[in-house]
Image (cartoon, rainbow, N blue to C red; front, side, top):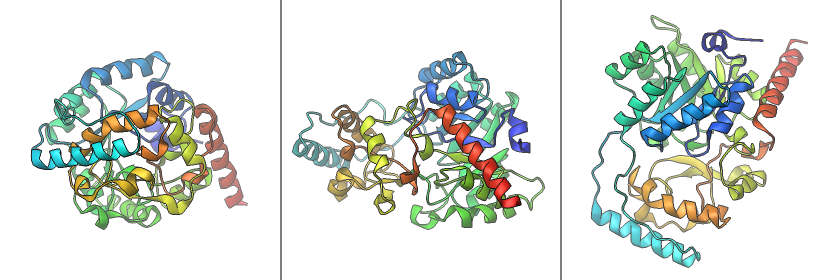
Length: 360
């Protein structure tokens, strides 16, 4: 069974592997795309040359249709260096108390320049480009259209979905409160945009089908199996985007300790966190989250994210999942460790069974 959305992109299934920056290496992206879904390279943390190299690796692994995803950010950031120094002091003390022999440093740049990343994305020319944290400019939209790159914008409210539709997006991915990882919110305070997926989805579908053009809506927010995909479709979704479901695949580059912790997750342990990056994100409440000093949490994204990066790398190397940013969706306890291609096949089998059950 195919859908208009899948047909437009030339994929077999209305299934997108979420672009989880830092956890979606070429092997995972290619495996999902080659299995008939849309694999997504989360490139928010990548320098331009790395974007080009990883896109080439994905193609070398046989994937023709895949997405590259970026965070819409300014090219430069103002930093309160007094606050940075205080945060570094607190972070260093925390790592020392946890026995990790690593300390913070001020990076040459707080994050890659978005304009340079965007130029690399255009050069890589994937079939799909997706964006979070904001709306791209009209000039950037034209660059994508010139290359026939399908544009997906991320929204956490109906107003943000409308903003993307008005900006010319080909589709909008609505991110429910249950979704793991960073919140894509850009028009509201994060606490005002924590709307459950199955409330947000039909509202967004109604809003984006009422204008001059009918903009497809993609559902994201802790969908973990084929039944959830069908439920989203019934509420109007053109496709489902799954992230947490792929975190325990062997092709995923999430730390081994993180993967292990997901297998033991209980739903009440998943919460909204700012302490790793300075931006609201959904993940496990672990030792780092509980011990992080409040003043350090006041640093905005991407400053705090850059300061904690070496600490997270050291924690991963030490097998300390409790000191990692263990992003995950609300239903993380439903993860099923298996190769990505097998998971895609399983999801679609479940989806077909659910459809038959509903029709009977």
